[in-house]
Length: 45
Image (cartoon, rainbow, N blue to C red; front, side):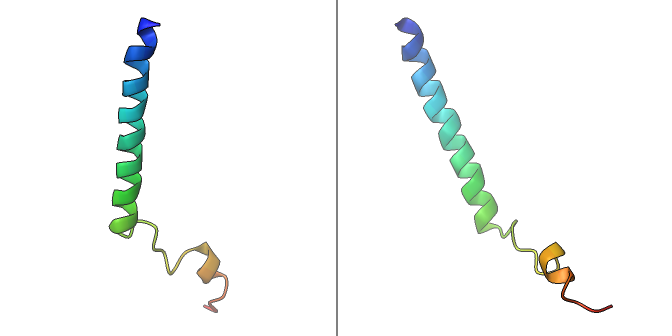
């Protein structure tokens, strides 16, 4: 039972860090790719 006292806060902290990293990548436009594969197929070179 003592293990849960340690593991639950650690999992919440790691989950929060993952969420913060995801939100940071969204806010800094890491996923904006106008010339990506989906748009590149429509262009005629």
